[in-house]
Length: 114
Image (cartoon, rainbow, N blue to C red; front, side, top):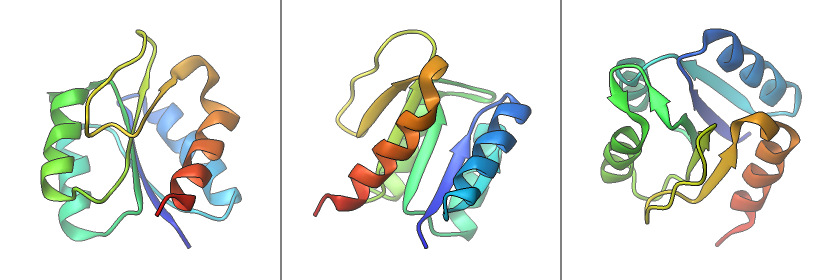
């Protein structure tokens, strides 16, 4: 079972997203700020990380870079309401207003990459 860390300061969105992911067969963990996300990454292993562009405690790009530095093989998906983001450590950037089913499709596609 693939595991997903979903980071968004909007607790409702984070929990709902994790509920949807769990219904689709993923193990999903919610983090509502950068500190929670980094703690989860220190104690658990994830196949995919999904983070908002804006996170509490740290800019989402900065958080993604820290995650990439610690876990370079873990794909990172950036979610944003403010236009696309490009960085070598971001595997995909998704518009927040069209998160589902796009997120599920993206996670499946990343799972097929070698």
